[in-house]
Image 1 (tube, rainbow, N blue to C red):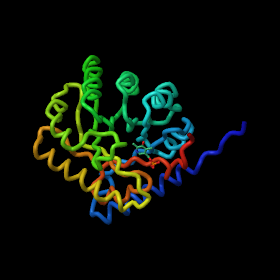
Image 2: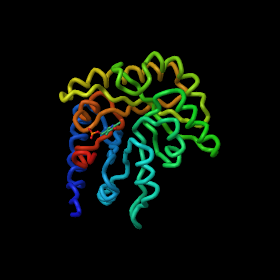
Image 3: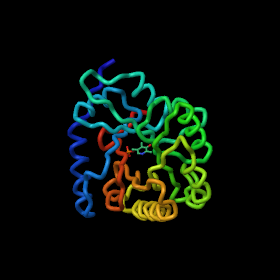
Length: 240
Ligand SMILES: *Cc1c(COP(=O)(O)O)cnc(C)c1O
């Protein structure tokens, strides 16, 4: 077996950062207010270490077991700062414990009341609270995870009252479309839903919009994204 060579991760991160800054400038926004989450799903730990060595700290994984294997079982080399793990994929109920055990900095993908309750109970039992976003199926596509907007309006009082969850905003994945402009109306819709909820529930923190991936993050930034989740533009094609 040959050792696969790493893609130019530091250069790719730099390129993505430059594109983020340009998009922020076009929108009259401060690029310092936008977090780049480097999505490492399917890639080995060596990719994470290369990004850490380039000074990058925020990483995203969409499967709790894979996140646990790469961010808890495998440790950070001495001298590197600790990575911050973002869980960005759907969490099945039976995976809630392992998701909790990953010590996520932020869970982007609370997509139903049941998992919200379950994660809150786990955190509360440990005397803690988890920072999370609510995933919205803003396009209404049947294949997509996330709350429908109306459903979210209904369950929100209960979710905001859960003692083990601290909500910080919304996340979405628009329909797959090679044209990044096709995502713009969905990003704008997520922002207006956020603005509506922030007015209705001013006691909660609504500062974050997690939206935008490799092919559409510039449009997402123009529409108000505060967190973008970028995989292939940094690490190359996925490995499964
Ligand atoms: C894989 C994934 C991403 C990153 O996708 P790229 O197109 O590789 O940038 C972003 N968000 C979620 C939820 C993902 O699962």
